[in-house]
Amino acid sequence: MRARLLRAAGIASLVFATAACGGTATNATPNGAATLPYSRRASSSSAIQHVVIVIQENRTFDNLFATFPNADGTTQGRMKLPSGGYSYIPLQKSNLVEPCDFGHSYRGYRKDYDNGAMDGFNLEGGGKPCPGPTGTKTYQYVNRAQIAPYWAIAKSWVLADHMFQTQGSGSFTAHQDLIRGGTLIEAGRKSKTLVDFPSAMPWGCDAPKYTKTSILVSKGVDELSHYRRHDGPFPCLTYPTLRDLLDSKGVTWKYYSPPEPRGTGKLWSAFDAIQAVREGPEWATNVVPTTQFFSDVQYGQLAGLSWIVPDLFNSDHPATAYDYGPSWVASIVNAIGESAYWNSTAVIVVWDDWGGFYDHVAPPLQDQSGGLGFRVPMLLVSPYARKASPKHPGYVSHTQYEFGSIIKFVEDTWNLGSLGTTDVRATSIVDSLDFSQSPRPFHPIPSERSRVFFEHQRPSYQPVDTE
Image 1 (tube, rainbow, N blue to C red):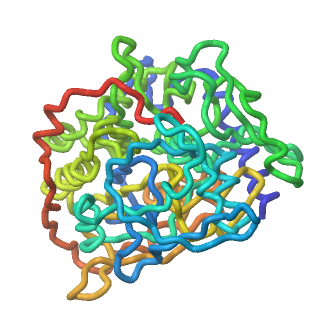
Image 2: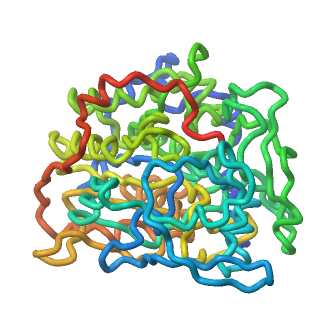
């Protein structure tokens, strides 16, 4: 299977590399003028015509849904002892606002994972402003009262309790995985995969010229010994993404991301690292500010596929002083639910990486590209979302998903073909939808802050994550 995946990825890379290097957007008109990003020219093969992927930050499933009914959660965790064994300790109920930004790099992932024992989270680094080993700090779950919108969504729609990151790494590669399904840059006997984050920001074609990425070089032996920090290429990449498949079929897309840092005009966007987008006309038409999402929904300009990234203030990332994240997500869901787009849309809310927090489920697959990574929550909101029962509309999916499952769902929705990455092995999230049922009515998600608050909010002008 792995050999077939690598061959497929290699073929896909060869097919798209030439176009990507040229930096020309495939949805440009013959005279070179880019088409409007909201002008639909292709239709979905299913009842779903619009997919919105909301990307939150740095939480495990146990951290947010440890006590959710009928879900695979826990309130105790394994902690490695100096003697080499482990003990069980209770997870502490905590606040959503967490003062420590725990380490969540590839090396930290290997410590946490500990060959499947899942007991090394106490050895993770605390980062700023909490240097040194974390000890028991990562063994926590958030008070449900502080994340009420997430629980309200889960109780009404779909909660997936076995969604795994593509790889054990941080936000840079996670966001790449959510537009591509993997960061393999060289296939073959010694395959190379991007991991962790580049040596300088911004993370993409706008980075300083000396910037390097980190890579994993696989030889079929010990993965950790082949981790090469800042020994990879400049982060301006030519591999294909969903953008290539969408453009080839005339399906519109947008990537909503916040402006940062002040005065530079750069965007914290996965597509800043994709040369064909960053150096082509789509950078001006398809990569837009996060706050524009609400007006696009209101004025009928929602693209077929949307990715949306929060401002730091609205992120669930630790080490911020704000708890706006749940309300921000609710405002996006409510905007869709209360619009004309409701009956044709699927909203996917997913957290990009584990953020160093404890989770008790060991990743079920280990490949030579650093994955699978740890569990993260996923919420799915749609009029076709499955119901557990008439009295209990919330459905808990126990299907094993990964980020490639989202990629596969998008590909299948518009018959796009395959990127030949993890979408090949992944199970689509479509099994959490039931197209035989009549569209379900939408009921607004209660939240402390409304859409108006976020429409008028001043940007933080700070990166959402630096790891």
